[in-house]
Image (cartoon, rainbow, N blue to C red; front, side):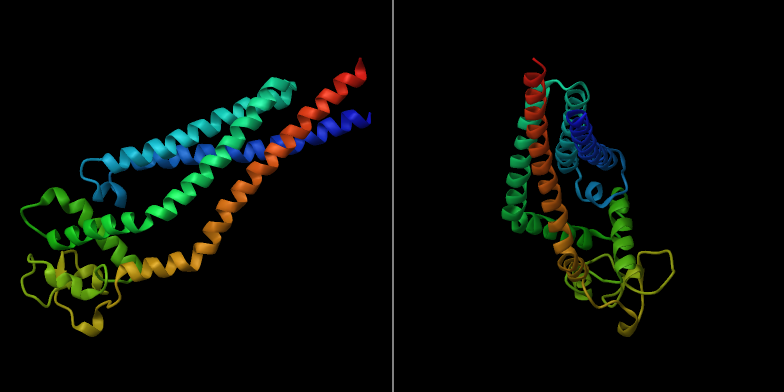
Length: 248
């Protein structure tokens, strides 16, 4: 009776964590698919040839699919008490932990390089904004307007970034999204005291630093959950072995 209760407890917690990983995998797949299919997001707008989008989709979609398959494998091993599947499940989870650590280190190491590419792309969008000869870039400008209006910011570093734009009727104009104006046009003539002065990069950096601990906590929480799941799986494997030995 005690062994049966212990088996049920093991299965309960293993399936609980396994279900959480399954939801996580489905979310990753959904996010990757959304990036690939949605033409009106910032990543798509800045990536003219879709190379970045395809790369991100492969990362999120591949990771999500692998997580879902891993969870199905784990469910079969846990539910049917198949020891070889449990060991395979534990090994693959350990591999996933290693990949997560490597990816986290890679993102941290490459963040300056990514920031530089991002900075150059935004500068290009700002310089071409409102051009009558580039109607195909309207989605980019629309998204930039949405970012500036939502964050109440102007330009990348500050409002003076718009001085490099040559499509304005006069040098004093700024995008209407840099002001409280509700006019539906690219540029507005507004006084300086009615213009958002702070750059969007500062706003985004402020948000990032305010939420960095939360993002770090989520990453370490996921890693800790994976380590705990591996430990539970190995313990369950041993428990099944001891039960089989006792029944002989």
